[in-house]
Image 1 (tube, rainbow, N blue to C red):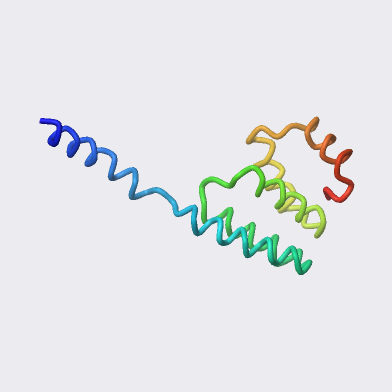
Image 2: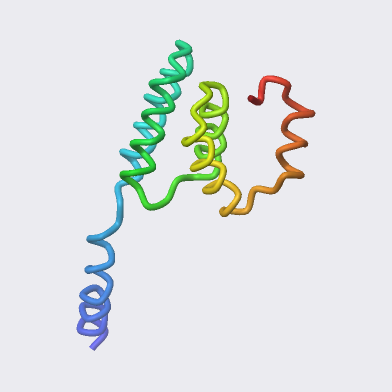
Length: 108
C-alpha cells in the first residue's frame, strides 16, 4: 500500500519537477559574469545579466543588485530601470540602498 501511495505521489510531483530550471548552470553563468567584472569588462557583464534574466524566471537578489550597479556604472538607463524595478519589487528598500552607499563607497 505504501508503495502504491509513494508511486502516486511521485507521478503527481514529476510534471512540476520537469519544469524546474537548472540553477547549477545559472551559478556557472554567474561565475562567468564575475570573471568579466574581474577584468573590468562591465558591458559584457551587464549583457550576460540581461541574458540571464531572460533565461530564468527567478534571479537571486544579490545578482539583481549587481546587475543594477553595472547598469548604473555603464550608463544603461533602460537596464537600470529594468533591474531597479525587479530589485525593489523583490523587497529591497531605499533605506538599504543608502546604507550600502554609506558603508561601501564603491557600491556604484
